[in-house]
Length: 136
Image 1: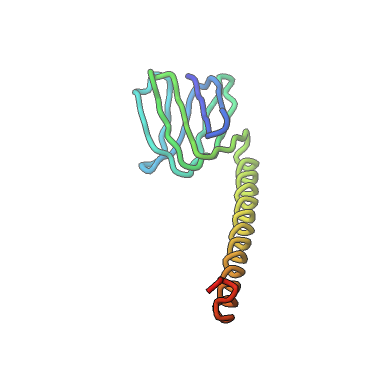
Image 2: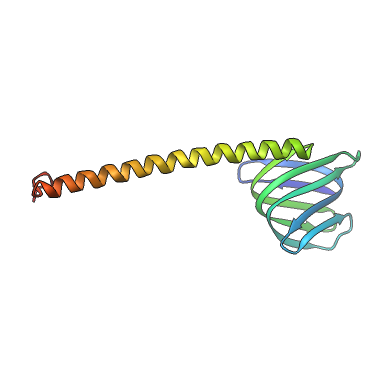
């Protein structure tokens, strides 16, 4: 079977595989060659596979669509994906990336709040000054 996992900016995985496992809202499921055509929505989950050599592969995905076509093509389109060969390492990498993103978002919210407060102070000062600064 052919497995292809993509996010909005890149092809993360494009390889031949023996099997694929994933999880949707109904639970975990497996896909082997000859599987019926299939479409499902993925939440936050791990898509795992066995390569032709038997080596495992993993991709942590955050929201996406998994399709099976012609019994031999498995495609995952995800909002965000992180690939790894070891679940422990993948978990560590994903948590580090989420922490980094959360810190960036926190900094952006703080800067935005400071700008709003600064604008409010200027409006209050203008109103207390009788509106002269505003041309009233």
